[in-house]
Image (cartoon, rainbow, N blue to C red; front, side, top):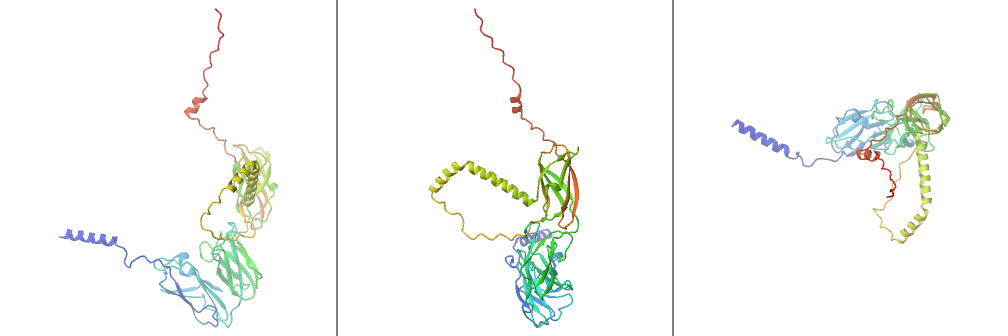
Length: 415
């Protein structure tokens, strides 16, 4: 009897685990913000907190960069904001409370989740003043990931006054930002590519700063890159082919400098100097290669001009092809930085071929890092051994074997 009861329980448990979860289909809608108090553009606000009301319970169990504190920016900032979770309501206020006669911007960043892990893809912003007026000035612009030549999506933005009041904002997916409302004055604007989302500039994080006077005459541009105060030195040298080297530096190089071929020196182990005819940054090398490809294509077009005319005549006589796909406007490309990007790789073109299995030393003088400091450095390397001859198959080996000489032909003898 006991054995039969255990079997029955096991069967019922298996059936229960195979059934769909209670409550119907899985819930996939993200939380929705239904109300913010106080209203945006309100003045004479005396509330202790700004309240964000949602249509469902918000998950408060995130860790690290997913803690709910990291999804709110209080500007101006006096430190990490105080964030209070009340299931479907979150209250936010500055570390030391709201100051009198001050305009505030409270930003809810995208990323909050509900108890089903559904993530909010959009955020919200409320602007208000604890005094009778709202300032109208602001700083707008775009932040770039300079080395990658693309907008710095979601860059963390700061505008700091001379007396260390810090205003905050976050750029959008195209690097565009607005900081304000602000009172007229001087601000140090900083863009940070905040890789760990901790709202602090950490070592090896890209950033840029710019002094801006408000009212600002035009949108500003910030070029975020990894910066320090050190010089750049050659890290590695690799051989692309017998007349091309690639030198990699340990820090970004200033793209505003012109690197002349005589800045580099290449000598062999026996002190023989190898001529250097050109030095290219990655962008310059792409331009040179594109020009060479275009020149080659132009030569081919001229060589095939007669054939091309015949094909063009034939194509003109043929009926037009039906358009493929749906017609539509081509989306605008993302914006690009106004300056060429910094780089760590330099292509060195040689005036003569390198010898296999030989030691060389490449040195550079006066090359300037992004820090503005210049220095000299060198790196030794050895070219690769020559490639061994290809192995022949048994069939190819047999074909190359010498054949027996033919017997000499003797003239016929007379009888």
